[in-house]
Image 1 (cartoon, rainbow, N blue to C red):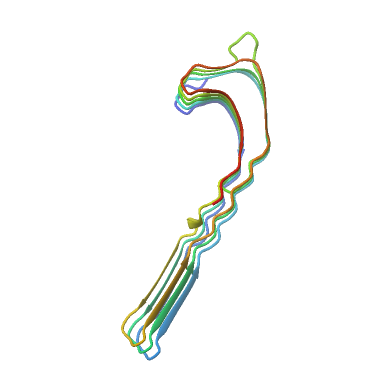
Image 2 (spheres, one colour):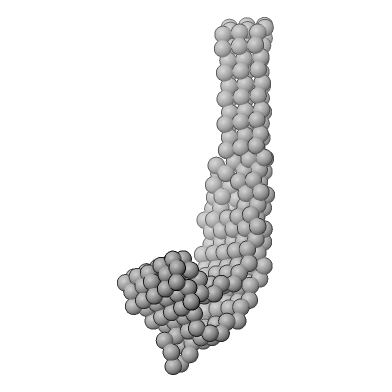
Length: 255
């Protein structure tokens, strides 16, 4: 029995490691005095690593599971892919001081974000009863969720409750009796690799300054998998805005 906030009656799962972040890069050029003085700097932030792939998770649970804390779950079976790393930061700067025809140029490109890891297949068989007594709680959660940009996989949930008991019973507001879902990870944002570039050209005839900066590229959103839910028994909710059963497959949005 779980009694604290955010508690879990029983939890099984696998999780891939997160991808490493891209390296930090600084490029700079300084030219001080002289005819035709100029300076140039080019920098590229490091690319991030891919998140780890999670393993297949299979469970066969028998018994009664009870939680009495806010945002708690009676039984959680999930496979989570690791998130991709952030693109490396890049800083490029050029300073050109006194000189006839002086000029400066700086080009900076932020590193690309790493792809998220794929989740594994999740299969769950639960025989027994689950009761949650507080708000925003979930009786049974079966989930395959890819890391950012990773794919969710197949989810199969089979629930058999006892005929002489309450089955799955939630009493709190915004609670869910049983939730089975496959979720593709959302794509990384284009600003995953941060870029800062700047050019300063001071005194001089025909002085010129050019600065070009390009943010890093985000990873694409992941695909979701098939979801199958097979429930035999009673599922009851008594709180406001509560849901008895939810089966969903959600693809991740693009970065």
